[in-house]
Length: 180
Image (cartoon, rainbow, N blue to C red; front, side, top):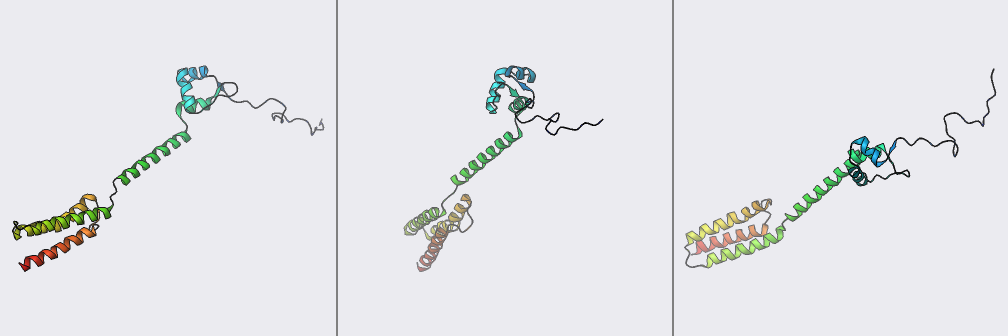
């Protein structure tokens, strides 16, 4: 025999809004119970839960997934830690590179001044024979600037003023040598 179904009757298994019993919250453990279950000291577990920013519910208990994340770590928190460490490393590398930067304009100006002073002093010295002066000029003009560029890791020709000063001094030296 078939009965007519009441449309307003509750369907079995589905709680109605505001009526019936609430959905089961899952297994929840106190600190002591979680410590026994996971074989961890209560104080250590409390510290790990605090560290993982896991808070107890109104019942002062924790869900198993909260305890697990606090003890084993969550994939999300591990990724956040990894990204943070990578960012810190990149910042450290950038700071290290900035510390090693050299203002080539300043180096170029200073080297030009040094080359002019040294070569001027050498050429003005009457006690040094021309052969020795020639060797000193050649070394100064050919090597000093290039050696400095190499030691600073600069591209060849970066110190334009110093190269130009060396070339001018070479020309002055040739004129003086041929003139005497």
